[in-house]
Image: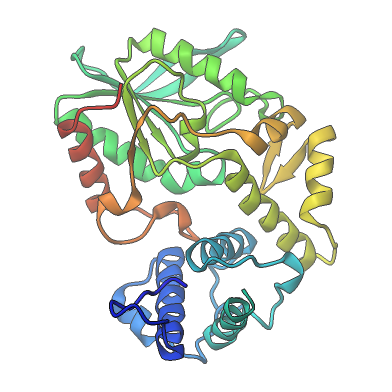
Length: 102
Length: 221
């Protein structure tokens, strides 16, 4: 696990969810060059692929590769579809389920 | 300013240079492929700051890249290593500064720095994935494995870059030169890595941080 609370116990589900959420926002901030206010304004319904003109296939590939590296998961190409990239909430749910499998 | 250098045995290439005959002369090895575009502004801005801090620096066009008229698909990593060696000799460079994948073509034996060095396998992974996603949008199903197989035998276009079979093959196992002093992206402060950006962008604070590190910290030998 990536978070190790100082008391040595296993990270709670809330810690894990907060970690994934924070990390995913950080990747979006870096890929899209967002400032902190815009990152904070992202919610589950915020549109990603198809809503943001910057997100071409090269940018999506960079985004996914960075998510893999920062969250220690492997995303297969056939798992990537428009639905999973439609909103921040969908991407978050996908990544959380991959983390739970791993 | 722009200067010519003997980029290949066949002809000359251009280089951006800040040359006032000073003692420290840094050959800058650009990031490769798509990342070169993302980091171009940052790279030249860093060089301008190095110039202001009394350091000469040189950014050669690799044959097949940027303004070069040479075809990219015949370039190889070992070829670029030889070209870089020629650039070092031509400009009388004392140090190298490699950005990202540029650290794979840095010749051994020169002191220098590597910013967030990356190996060929990681570069290929992202480029292959982009190709798979773009093809799928266009209604063609491809896999990274089959693309790689094609690439090894016949070469491959990845994100507009025509890579020859020898380039693909070499990238699969190429590692950054380990003797350069590594500078992590985090060492440049906040704002995130510019090579990750969907669109080319610039961050003057990061360029200033990199120039300060180069000017103030001894290079690895």
